[in-house]
Length: 77
Image (cartoon, rainbow, N blue to C red; front, side, top):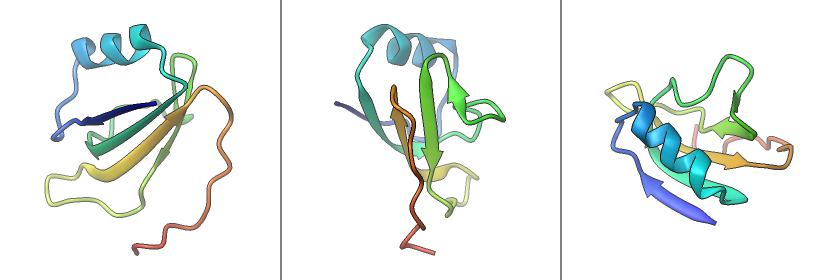
């Protein structure tokens, strides 16, 4: 399990670290909306974002998993 506060930042270096580390699960905070593609995927990861967004338009949190995710309702709406 990897954890990371991205502070709304995102570029190829962030992506490379996540992909190359190969954690089964990433728990991320302050997540840039372009972390994953329109299909909620990045490389081999399935992505789930919190519904709520912060003032800079980043999501409060995200979970990335190598296994398919079953989304539950966001309790913080």
